[in-house]
Amino acid sequence: MFGLALRSLRKRASAFTASFLSMFLGSAIIMAFASMFDTAEASGATGQTRSTLTTMATVVGGWGLLLVVFAVTSTLTLSVRQRASEMALLKSVGATPAQLTRMIVGEAAGLAVAAALLGVLPGALAGRGLLGLLHGTDQVPDNVSYSFGMVALGTGIGVTLASAAIAALITARRAGRVRVTESLMAAAVDRGRLSKKRAVFAGLFLFLAVDEAVVTMTMMRGKGSDAMATSGQADILAAIGLALLAPVIVRRATALLAGPLRAFGVAGDLAVTNLRRRTGAMASAVTPVVLFTGIAVGTLFLQATENAATEESGLAATAEQKDIATLNLVVIGMVVLFAAIMLVNTLIAATAHRRREFGQARLAGATPAQVLGTVALESAALTVIGVVCGTVASVFTIVPFGVARRGSAVPDGSVWIYVGVVALAAVLTGVTALGSARRTLRTPAVEAVTA
Image (cartoon, rainbow, N blue to C red; front, top):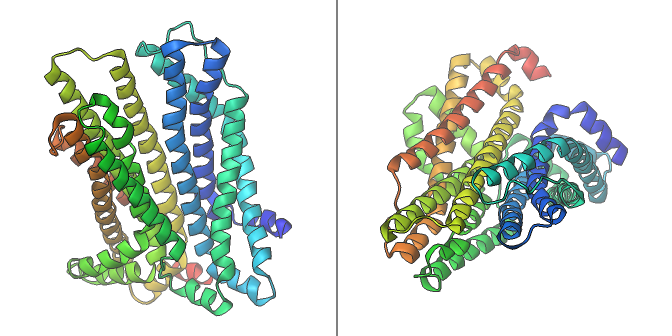
């Protein structure tokens, strides 16, 4: 089965692109932040300098690790889901669940090794840029030189391999337990049912988000910027929890949006049908929108509230506050980049896989314009669902921090911050989906159906 996994990677390289890029970017991000440990150790940094470097590595790098594992699991799940008919064929000729698991884990391991090795150079360059940012803001002295050592290398490669293996085992377990007849049905209709384990993990993450919010509003009230330690991670936990519930949310939201979508005629009818028949794939596309919106809005408004509180106190920002502000900006940059690439990868993978579906629709009488209109409406629906869920997730950070820091649940910051985040999410979703669909439609309908 490992040999089959390697052949599968060679023959179906495009199907694994999204997973590979998630691992590649993830390994680079993890190595970049982990290199701050190497820098602190090699330079002999002490005191505030060492604290700044290790905080940057542990806080931002730790949350980056969680997002990477989640992204890899999401893209691998989408890849396996798209191969439901292939899995059913392997089972029908005698493949056991254990053999399928070895094949999927082998594919993931092969991707992880290649992605981690290729991520070393960009990870080292990103780490050097990160240290330059700390130099530029006077948080780390200029005489502290950059070092990229075994901690960064071992952490990046080890975490990438571990996350890929965990994601593959989670994905393979479900694929191996489904019967042949159910696999064949899943190949035709992807309902995206919510498993019990997924529901449990979603509940766990949401519970942790609520817990962080309550702690912030009670125990951290009146403790100044220290409230960021608890409130800053609540939106991440809530966003992951809601993303895990995406199959149910998409299904319920489709019922609400069906009327408005159908007002657009044939394209609207097709969009509603696709949202209902391809719930699992659509949920995978919603996930990065939820993460992007929730974390970006939450962190930006949190920092805006902190800035307002500092101004009201009449005191100049301290070195520690500048450190926190830089951390928040780095988090936003990391989330924007990673979530944007995750979103683009997921949408490209999901849309490219629909070549046969688009060909069948055109042979049935739909015009290319109607197919593109369907994709546009689907993208609009996914954006609305993702933005709403992301906004709810951001509330777990914004409101508790406002109450703890300034005694008000109303956040500071311009409404244009929110508009900008939503607009970027909409542009990324729409442009990527339409661009991928347009390229897919270049294939003649008959060739797309018979391919």
